[in-house]
Image (cartoon, rainbow, N blue to C red; front, side, top):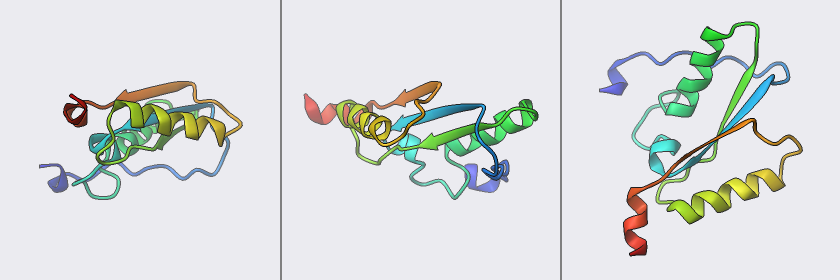
Length: 102
């Protein structure tokens, strides 16, 4: 169970990013049911900080519980309109909520 494991500490965002990752999707991305720092985008940011200590990655989590794939895409487009810097990578995870569209 994830809550029994200590999450990697997310590094402070005290300097500009060398690269930016955007995570969009449903509750799995949002981290519903996970404690602070246990969602996969937070863990990814911490892991990248460990693996690439000289580079700064920022992982932005815009996952929303209940989002289907079209909503996740719209959330990403809203993010892009509101930020000057486009992400270097987008991770898209949605699935189960699409059952409601059938």
